[in-house]
Image (cartoon, rainbow, N blue to C red; front, side, top):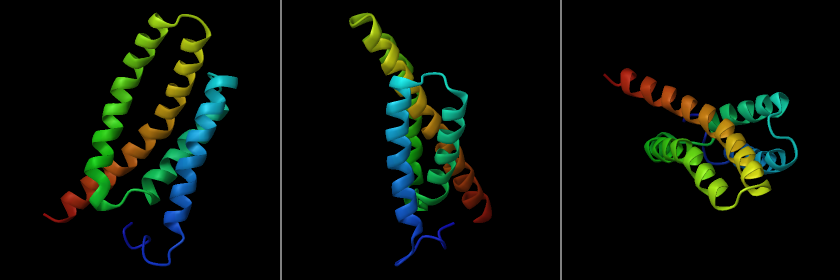
Length: 123
């Protein structure tokens, strides 16, 4: 995939826009449409696009560590914030973080597969 990303290539622009759109949709849907299967599908596809075109080979380890940290810590963060500010805040925050996870997890899976392929190919 590193052949697709180069000087003058439009792939980095698509990847950056996909990431931004994914975050905006996750925030809006977390507040206004929590639990929507269609939103989850769209965000999952955006996550795959991000993993394919937005993370270079040199960024893979950093991205994967950050993705793992976010996915693991986000559920605990929701629990803490919900207990401190019960009511609406916890509900929409849980929706937002859940949808951000739906973007991050497929991106991380794609980057992990690319990294595994890269390591196995170089042996």
